[in-house]
Image (spheres, one colour):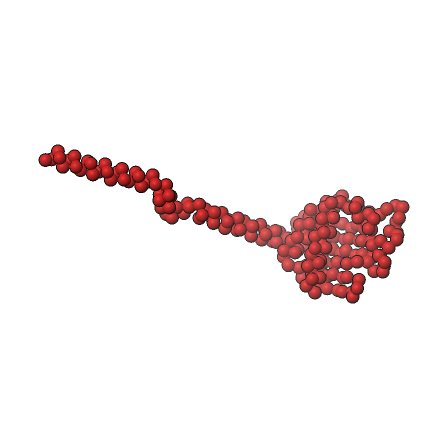
Length: 203
């Protein structure tokens, strides 16, 4: 009798153990339990990754803005000439305020305090310029007056980045020599025009 009971007990025990292994081998069910319990499900992982990426992006932007805040950028961009002799769009930046002067049509003077993001763009572009490689002028020796009816441009930039020394420079050119400007300076001018257009649009 004892032998029979022992045999029945072993048979039941083996049946339960086999069922347990079958359940643990059931990947979808087992996976769901692990994922909900341990936070390792694919969707959760993707969501976490998305949040991390968004967080990293926000940190990068905040760092760029904070970095720009530690720098002081001032500049003037003056133009002359053209058919009217009044030049084209002029810019002046001081103490974070960008002034825009447009002489054509109905002359417009507009100014606005730049956002941290706008200022960070300008500072980053100014930092990217190798100012030591910028010449004081890019003028055709055969046409020193930039004749005839060309626009002439004069740029003066100062970038203060404590504790380092100030950087920047002054240069002058006209329409026919625009192609001689260094690529990094051309990029800076493009950023300046873009920010200036944003300010003008808000006036």
